[in-house]
Image (tube, rainbow, N blue to C red):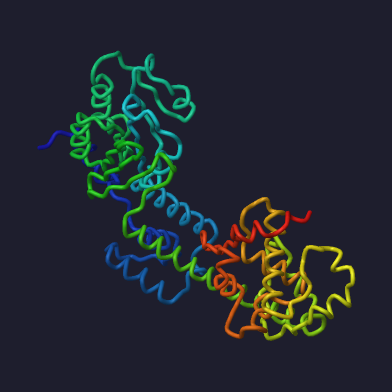
Length: 420
């Protein structure tokens, strides 16, 4: 007794039901293969019998025997359509709502940081402000922002942002995530409303020179520094980075120490060879004001008598006539040091001279170290000990790790004027 116009509608619904969910790919392939199989005619109209016959036929024959190139293209086309349906179901976009009056510094580095946090591409960017009083509109427009102008007034940009943001799903049905960029408290209402609509909300605030991003769904907070344009890691990540840097530095220092040790060994070998061949080469490493002083083992230095030096180089007495050339006694050594220190003080225009420079000048002049010369008269002594023991002649002081020597006033009065 049903009216006739109901029947076509019911038949149409039965014949072509709407596809609500995308079928499985394996089911589509199986159905397509069965549709293109060359199946013998079956008189039994029972669907179960036909299915059994298809299964038995598939067991006896292989796939290439039943599917030609046209049938294979149909199967691939159905698989492609299915993949498109699945990608449409999984696709989504992120939307950025910016209160340009509140966050005035929002450059491309901050956008890249937000894009890294988002699971979907950041495609829609909307900025709200009274653009008559707010700068940066040209830059934001060139970067793809939609600029919404609001009249002047307190919280005017916030109100417009809430009005448009509450209906964001109506304008952008594919929206999955929204970045609400403002430090104003009023925007909490917008965040709660968008969360109730099933969107994932990120609250972006500015604190001094840092940007904080809060994931309202998980409660996780990320920080970004505007001064260095880098993400601020957590304490755990910082500890890991510091540990890695320390290990790298330790490896580098160990390598440098190994290289330095090799160089020192090579230099010592070279110095020993030079001493054995020509002892005068030691003086080359001890020139005054040199940047590198070679420390040569004292046992390799052969003592040389001053008289032999004077005979081998007669002009040595002419070069520095103020120096005494006889160091046969302790008194002679005192005279040599007094004249040498006085001349060096005169040359430097100071009232003192360093012990290091005295040693270098003594070795350059007499081709042997001052310490070895002093040990010739007193075995357990050295230049510093010798100078300290003669308080009537020398005054020695330690300044910033450097021993400085000066002549006493009595010695300065007794000596003649400096020799130029």
